[in-house]
Amino acid sequence: MRKALLILSVLMLTNCTQAQKIQLPAPDKSLPMTLMEAFQNRHSTWQHSDAPVSDQDLSTILWSAIGINRPEEGRITAPSAVNAQDIIVYVMRADGTYLYDNKENALVRVSKKDLRAAVCGNDPKPRTAPIMLLLVSDLNRFGGDSRFARDMAPLDAGYVSENICLACTALGLNTVPRMTMDRAVLQKELNLTDIQLPLLNHPISVAK
Ligand SMILES: Cc1cc2nc3c(=O)[nH]c(=O)nc-3n(C[C@H](O)[C@H](O)[C@H](O)COP(=O)(O)O)c2cc1C
Image 1: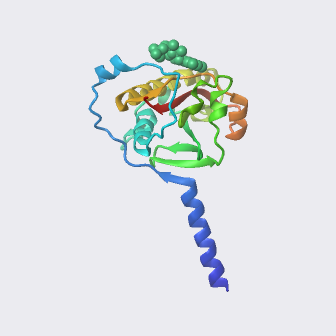
Image 2 (image 1 turned 90 degrees about the horizontal axis):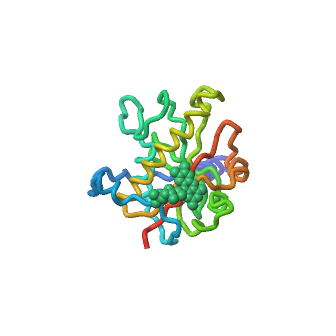
Image 3 (image 1 turned 60 degrees about the vertical axis):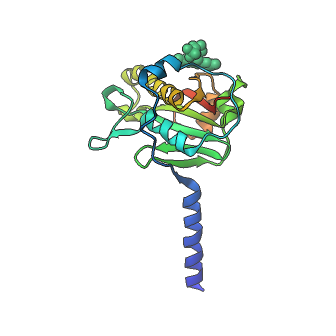
């Protein structure tokens, strides 16, 4: 009986872990579009199709955003003030909300809820996008709240946002950087403290 219970709990734990962590495919680091072509083609899109975006493309976008590009030093694709790496990226989809773990290239589920409506806020235009990324600056990574941290956080978010824009362009996907969102709902649902600041979001969709 005890053995059966032990096996049952191991199985439940395994299922639970599987449900909470999604290992992403390796990012595609050899997209054919040149940097200059990406600059030429980057633009914001406000109307989004609801066609699914693949985990392969999502992995490439997330790696471009804050992926580790120098493993020996643990440094990332986007520059950050004093290498704080304060920008953390949440992924909102119909099947729940995830935190991107850049060390494991994995999605860690933080909520079963679809929080895309909260990312839309009072502007429903992006509501059909299958994926929304939320950029949060965690001021703890600067050692806590300070004038310096509050000044640097939006700058760091800007670099990550531009990386996302260019990766989406190179993948032929639509996006737009947005400051509009329902911050109060997102703070509550994601259990963010008052020094974890939702700064920008990116709806992402397949180009029509
Ligand atoms: C910091 C920042 C915040 C933005 N916030 C919003 C927003 O809340 N809603 C929106 O529809 N577009 C937003 N945008 C997108 C801009 O309106 C868009 O970049 C601008 O119209 C220029 O168009 P382009 O990106 O196609 O060059 C934002 C852009 C930036 C850089």
